[in-house]
Image 1: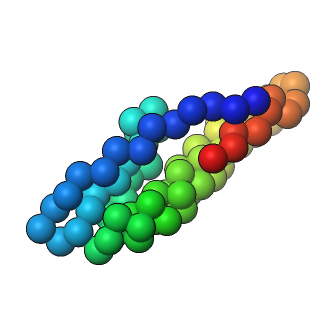
Image 2: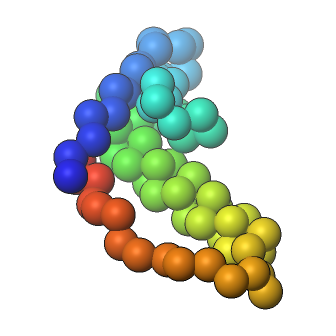
Amino acid sequence: MKEKLTAIFQKSPYGYIGFIEELPGANTQGKTLEEARRNLIEAVQLVLDANRQLFEEEIEGLEIIKEDFGVVTV
C-alpha cells in the first residue's frame, strides 16, 4: 500500500516551516529547506508513534483483533 502525503513548506525569517497536509500535528522547522525536509520525516514518525501509544492505552483490557494493514512508503 502506498499513501501519498503532501509536504508543505513556508519560508520564514528564520528558515523554513514544514508540515504534512494530511497529518495534523506533523510539523517542523529548519534553517534550510533540506533540514526542514529531514526534520519533517522525523515529525511524521513521532506523530505516528504518539498516536499508536495513545490508542494502545485506550484499548488496554478490551478484546480486539489486531492485524497488519499495510505500509506507507515515503
